[in-house]
Length: 168
Image 1 (cartoon, one colour):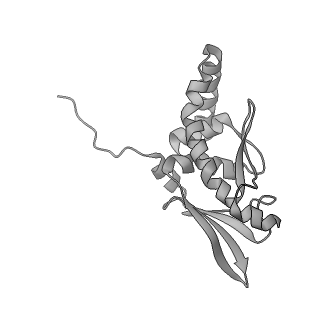
Image 2 (cartoon, one colour; image 1 turned 60 degrees about the horizontal axis):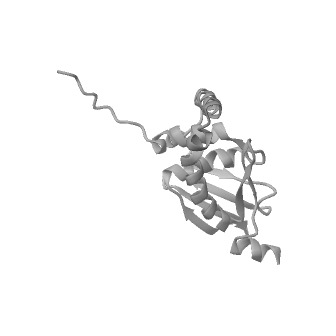
Image 3 (cartoon, helix red, strand yellow; image 1 turned 45 degrees about the vertical axis):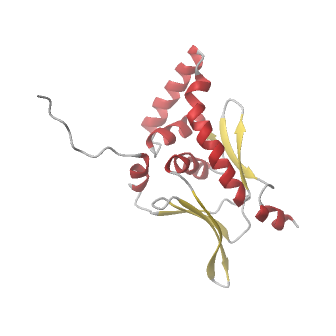
């Protein structure tokens, strides 16, 4: 008789929560006005747009993200103002928290997929999640833009109600 392991399988969210900080803050200088920031609550899966007015924080908006959406959003936020390579997004998507080891494995995996002509198939799940994530980040005035054969980058978007008000 085979012995069955009862240990808990880690989900990507459990990897995210191993980070001691429950709420991660991002200023995204150049995308957000001064005194504005984003707060990513990894426990609840929420991204909040905060502003400090009269020495008090105020929440301007908030969006709920699924675990897989957070797994691709976090590497993009952490990479800003630079682009996030495909292998980093794939590692985050697969494990919840990209490490040097998982990034290297994903880099090799994508190189092999490119060589045998299945790169698009390998990245399709990540692109599907990115498209849902993109719709949510637009409400913050942030676009997730593709950089051909390189990765993705966060950029200013004029698609949101907030962005249109800011530009007037």
